[in-house]
Image (cartoon, rainbow, N blue to C red; front, side):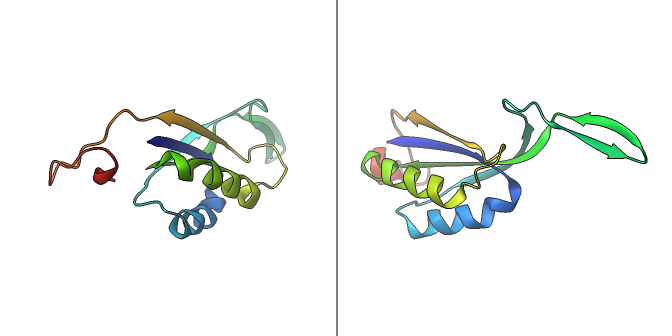
Length: 112
């Protein structure tokens, strides 16, 4: 199994949820997070004063899927979410050793 950790701009969340709903994703977890990447934030002007904003609001979406679905799903997410500007986000891919459904005790793919 593969765990996808997808960090995106908040305004892209509905687009991402639509992509995941159309795919073979059985569940997801969404968290509001803040951070920055290579750009290190940006400058803003407020009442004539300039200041740095380096912690930007992001959304983290996590899901666990079958390995054979992962690559196609990643390609779809990248092509649909990309704007070509800084801050589009990142996808981190992890190996998942096992999953256990607490209610039934099912393990592995059956637990998804």
